[in-house]
Image (tube, rainbow, N blue to C red; front, side):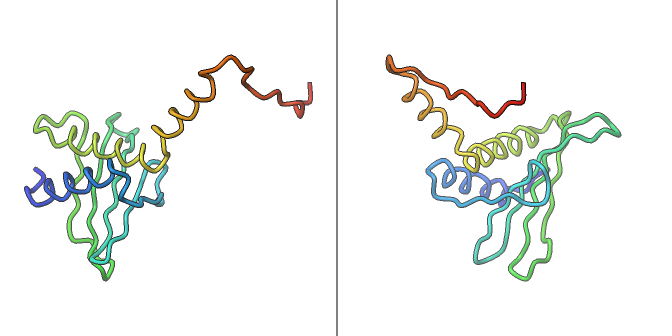
Length: 126
């Protein structure tokens, strides 16, 4: 069960991320992102565990000295709603880092005229 203060932290950071006011970075995992604050660091990760064939989302909070102060890891089968909370937060962070919405908007603008689009790659060996 995710404590209320962590849920509040997630919601506040989610709001700031949606507004484009949070600078997320990649971390050590393939789908792991982190944000460094003056007071510490927050890491969010989503991964598939082949051992039990489950998806997991993990949120870890570190203090400014780098010590882990709380870790919440929730599996996809969780019925408390915590998985959805962390999963949705991870997707917002991932989309923010990858600039998904901005990229799609630029692509729509690019193809939304009568000009030819697409580049031909002549470097292929065949």
